[in-house]
Length: 543
Image (cartoon, rainbow, N blue to C red; front, side, top):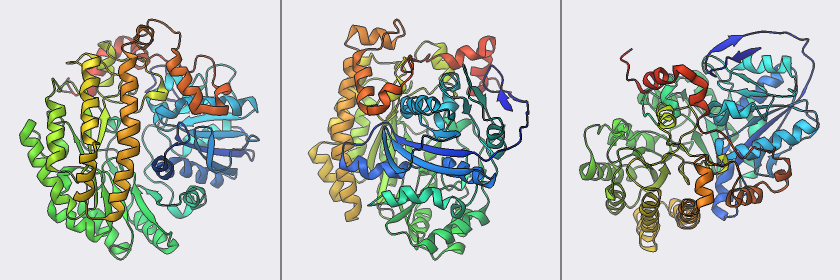
């Protein structure tokens, strides 16, 4: 068995082979922490399907096992089938769906099923995951899956953390994983997002991002071309390729050449996250030529993180004007452009970051603003250990750890009330009726207009604003603030009530203590190595 030592990073190989018997394997991809209550949320939830659960399903079938798949939104099965007669279940979870995953694991383990958790959450919080699963997986390759299936043992106490040294060099084709993708595509009624990937890792070194520590690698271009030809042949109505690359198009011309050789330009629609540094006018023309309808570039900050826009030394108002000018150019070629901004970074101070964002929205009204709040996910990014060392990480339950709607790192230059007052004021401005109308008029595609208006009203004006107001109230209530700061283990009713509402029938299966977690567990696991690890991850040692 391949497993990590106590610091959760070094890999030790201990292989115990058993005769491989045919197993009933379940793949469970958790797309949301609850069933969406809005029309827009219901429409978009099916687009969150991940690639690796489908890949693991293919690998398990290649090893001779019977495999089924289920896509969950909280307690509801959106597509596929959640069986309770499984020998082993692989559960894919984000951190904000962790409480759903823990409850699903407890339910299945009561039926005798061995449970495995993978995805972003166990890479961030392995120490917590092994309390509720028999196996928690970091990096995953075929040999890790084979070893787990060969062992397939339900633990009576703490589970085992397993990881591969690096990401796999090859993934199976879309054709091979089509049977596992088909159920969620059939469920999606408006847009059918087909997840594809051409590269892993990211060459940029943003210190808040988990991909900053993953070496960049492209996958095989011939395999990619075969995927594109297969998708075109399937002729799935209302489909769009959803590129899961952390940063699409680093080798831009190679990607475009491969696409143009594989399928007629424009015969497939695509959407991808990529940096403003790659979105020059020539590249935008080529993206349009190849059917790209959506791009999601990162702005991150007006005072920091300039690498992705080639504006490393440009800050403040000058950066606002230059990015706005570029965004308006991109919108002439790509109908849907979403700009990602992060608030709460240490470079932010006073009202200026928020006021500059308002100015940017006025200069580039057609760009949809996607606001994130600084969030520490365990030890998975360079800055996170430093935040933990400095005592700045709060114990926000995983259920609320979604960087789009909450923050668990104490701001350096604001009180909590000041920070939320500024953020709420900004959201009210960006999603006011006037700005919704300006955004509607600024884009030229009617489909984009309708989607952005629906999104702006449901997730921006209503949901995001409500969440921010709720979070501001956390810090005004002494008992809730006491819990967030780790001074009591008694879960405030404001948290337990919301989690119970989301989990529905799964609530009774949530293990005791599963709402609590140690926000500094990653730092503690390093012991005396902590300071060195912080320096190494931040790139400050010169080694």
